[in-house]
Length: 149
Image (cartoon, one colour):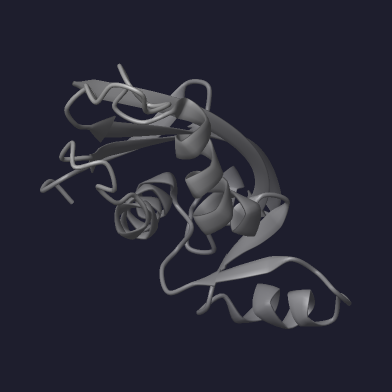
């Protein structure tokens, strides 16, 4: 069985090597879809009976491990020296430094890696992260799929 939870967050970035508008500082309303696989919990008397995982638990784990760190932050490539220097002049600015350009593709792969460590099979139903889809805009997204990145 597969289940998916969608969460949204706002963040700024720039692709310093891009040849078009994305080389400028800007932001997006990102959407992140998290797809988990697992058996439906059949154990009677537990709150999760009939579920793979409670959607509120999916959300809570994603918020604690990823969303709260990226939401309203500037996602910056560590090699983007001018922007790194600029951000350091801003007191208490929320910045998340990456080892790669903050493209949708790279962010999806990073999100998958972070979330894959966070979702654990605590109910014995073979819970596993299968897929992360990161929407940069409503019409543009990147998929990170288990075994494919």
